[in-house]
Structure formats: C-alpha cells, structure tokens
Image 1 (cartoon, helix red, strand yellow):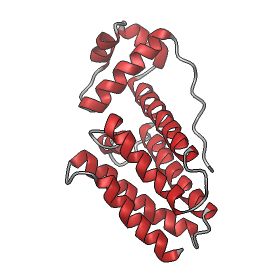
Image 2 (cartoon, one colour):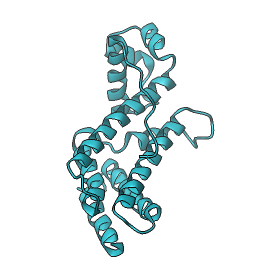
Image 3 (cartoon, rainbow, N blue to C red):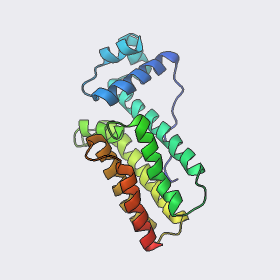
Image 4 (cartoon, helix red, strand yellow):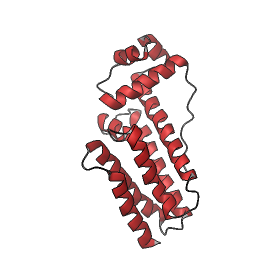
Length: 197
C-alpha cells in the first residue's frame, strides 16, 4: 500500500485512559459537544494530566482518529489475509470488512467523515483535516493496489468508483437511510468489476 500510518507513540496508562474516554465520547456525542473537563472526569484524571499527555484538545482529537484508523487498518489487513488470491473477491473483501467493522464500531457512520463535518472547510489550519484526508487517500490507494493486483484495466479509475461506493455506504450507515448498505455497495462493485474483467 502506498501510504503508511504515522508511527503511534506508546501511551502511558493515564494517556490510554484519556484516549479511550475521549474516543468513546467524541464518537458518541461529537467533538465540539465534548469538553476536556468531561473527558478528564470520564478518564479519572485531572485536566492537567490530559494536557500533559496530549497538549491540546485538537491533538487529542487527532490521536483519537489515528488510533481508530490503526484498528480499522488491522481489521482490513486481517480480512485480506483470509482472501489472499488476487481477483474480484479479494477487492470485494473491503466491503465485507467494512460491514463487519461497522457492526461493532460504526453505528454512527465513519468517525473521519463525522470529524470532518465538524471542523469547517479544512482551510483554517485545523489538524483534523489533513488526518481525515490521509485516511481516505489510504483506502483509495488500497483499492487501487487490489485492482492492479487483479489486472483490472485503469485500476485508478476503478478504485475511484469503488471508493465512491464505499463512502456512500458508510454515510448511509450513519444516516440510517436504509439497512445493510455495504452488501448493496458490494453487489454494485462486483457488477462493475465483472464488466471490465
């Protein structure tokens, strides 16, 4: 895969409690709705400990997104290991992985999309925007690599189409527009891949 995740520093027990509490609260309530007092109380630490470990709420938000992304990447890697042969089914594994991840981790949709929706247009220098953009580019690159492995003509164009299907499905999860969007996206993706195969 073309883009790697930033190296995540090991966390002290206090920092881990802060990050765990913040991750739960940010995802369930929203970034702007949760203050550092609430996070510190939920983590059983002082605000001083929170700031000593993370420096700012913005840094904590980025850490939340990075650690969640690391778990998602591990989930994708494990799913791809179960489907090692290049081809359409290996590409479609991303949709299967997203569905199984969503069941346990994403009842409100994508944390990166949700965070992006809260920070404005991304041109104000807020550190969340480059982080969520990096995460999305990584998945686009994964799709492209899988398409290239499978011999799909114009792998980048197909990766972009698959990314659109994936993103539509994850937004549909959060919006609850209709049930089971990942299997629906997978069916359309399979049809597209079979047309060019």
